[in-house]
Length: 388
Ligand code: MG
Image 1 (spheres, protein in one colour):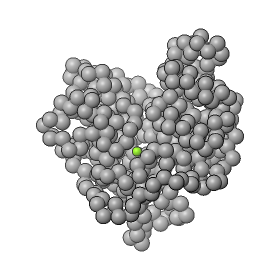
Image 2 (cartoon, helix red, strand yellow):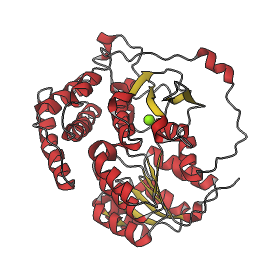
Image 3 (cartoon, helix red, strand yellow):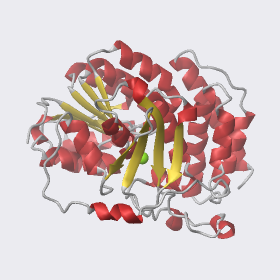
């Protein structure tokens, strides 16, 4: 098996669910000694474990207190905060950077990574939701840097488009599992408990994204992600409910031909692809029987169950500050749901009310992005208070 020669690899978000799977894949590919940077949020226990295994790596935590704690435990330097991370990236110049963190901070990390590396493996959809046009601008300027999606649907689309001219692309269909409550009675769904929402039928992921799957906020974000990654207008991106999780997305070309990405749902596949591209892994695992295609279902998304799509339709007529407010309102609503302060059904309402209250405009720079995030955050917190 051939893979590109990676000398220095950074994993930003290594303590999260996806980050830990990424480290597994890197280890299996024999790349343990190429990992030069591990970065987490505040979980110093996990980062300490990882540091033991990936001995060559510099350590970073976004949370300063947690960073100091780990520094005391290990008796060595731990870098802290966003500024430190940007400096570290400049200093180490890893050739492959995984960006697997959530929230607004991912935008700056992606921009910096595009500047200094050969390849950015991108899982942080938020960076494209809050700053897609800035990421696209930078990506186009950095001609030698590749941007490879890690999100399963987008990795699928990226693979389906290999060898195709941009003008051949006519339509993208993103598949959606529907999350943990997809078959619940609508009246019961309003008061679903945290445990219920965290039982995802297909993927095992972090808490935030699992809640975002149940509301389909995740799918709305993925539509925006696809819009920027593949530069296709919103009218030509559609989401469909697909229960089996075997089709990871579909692409239609101008001659009416569809290509479908079909395989077992396993996040390690898109992670591995982002490392091995343009080569593929060799695996001796059991292959999926193509006869499974006989029992595959695709359904229109029910807007009574997923009202966030009604908001999304309205956002398409608003300047792109609406996506920034959408992102931060969701962050706060999900946090408060997981804190047990608001019911499940409040999440979509809080996001909608916050987005529709905001006086929208087109952000000119990152300063604008931060300002919109700040005002949106305060508004979302006010909307939460109406429920508690
Ligand atoms: Mg996805």
